[in-house]
Image 1: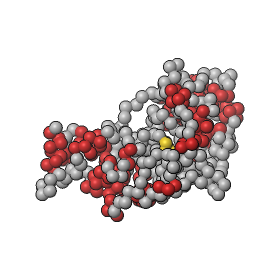
Image 2: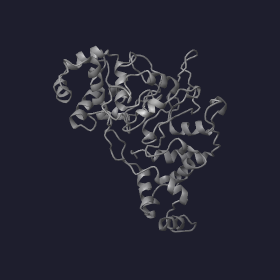
Image 3: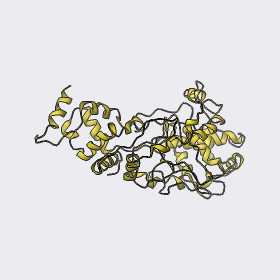
Image 4: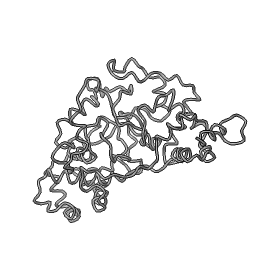
Length: 374
């Protein structure tokens, strides 16, 4: 209890110290966002998860245009390491303009769902689909196998997976995806100013905690309280990794719509590459219960996965369609949200926040402290 008393004293008006503004309950909520980074758990569905040789090979393949059928671009072309593994375009550009914003590839290890619509339930499956998607890298399974067999990577690949020439093209595709996944699992955000604040609170070091800016603390209070942001943005990654209607239009054109999670479920439930399928390396099929039990609903239409807020200041533009250019625009979107366009049969969790200009600024200040870059 001592640290709560110390926090209260530091927050009293007239004290000579900088303030810790949070209440006891707000401090307890803040502790739930850490500690960071989390401990790594190898993926049981991927036998080369945490394999150093596979990680090195995956990193090389990620940056090599060999994974596109004509050598036009690499994974890194759309997930630029210099831009937090995103790009600055509102919507990704493959062979054509794609439907959604490019998500960051950091902090993906151990999630239940992947992609804006959750069409994959493992990181290796999420790595697989762009390679054979006609609008993206456009390989067939056969052309991909031929490219790998003829590539400088074949010796490393066979050292990990055996005689590739005599393997089926499906297996080669899956093995490439698992190699990429082993690399992507290593991509995590660095610690942030918020993490230092959170850890100081946990150990009761209120002098260190009081170095966290007052504006960020006020923004955190809004995030936890009146803004209700933590309902969806919770846990170590500041995301529940589930699907919600954020009030963003899902029309791609006058005649096309983005079905969101509804379309993602249609894809997932017809895919051979799930944790419940034959390509998982886990004999216990851990995690397969999710794809076995999921059901489609009309309310899934136009919902999208809650993104992590770690390094959020580095990943503009925002939302599934990249329609909001900066964090202030995101806060104002929720501040003035049109509840009439939310699904009538969906979740009643959003309403206009009616924040003042100072409160908008404070909430942005808090979000900026979730990024590792100053």
